[in-house]
Length: 157
Image 1 (cartoon, rainbow, N blue to C red):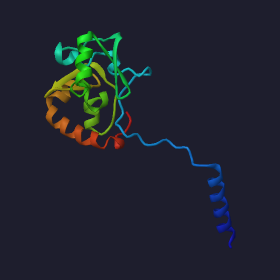
Image 2 (cartoon, rainbow, N blue to C red; image 1 turned 30 degrees about the vertical axis):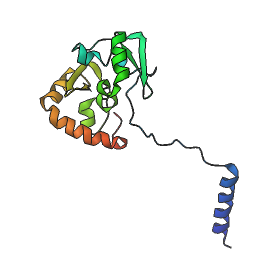
Image 3 (cartoon, rainbow, N blue to C red; image 1 turned 180 degrees about the vertical axis):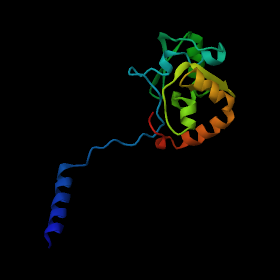
Image 4 (spheres, rainbow, N blue to C red; image 1 turned 45 degrees about the vertical axis):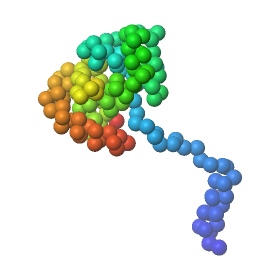
């Protein structure tokens, strides 16, 4: 047996004896844009965008957890509506900037730079980006949806 073959067999035996390698399993769900405390949308109420038509800060004592993210609400009624139908209220693209996702990367958002299109909440990096995005929302949504399907390929912004 050659030396290189012996080395390979010895290395393989060492790996078997050491046990399985510890690795990070790939995420099965797309990521959600959260702060260090696990709060989504920087504490803004996801229901208020549709029911009040404006960004509204949630209260830290009225919360719900959905897909590992903590959402805050301005009222108990908003929390109940969210818990009944979270998919209706969570921001698209995990709460990342809709323009960025459409362009192939992720970016933070300003919760006051938003738009609801066909009952879905889209957030953007800032007011200028939101205005640009809104001018061609249909096209950006089409691109964003296509990119989000394969979210693992998005560059972290």
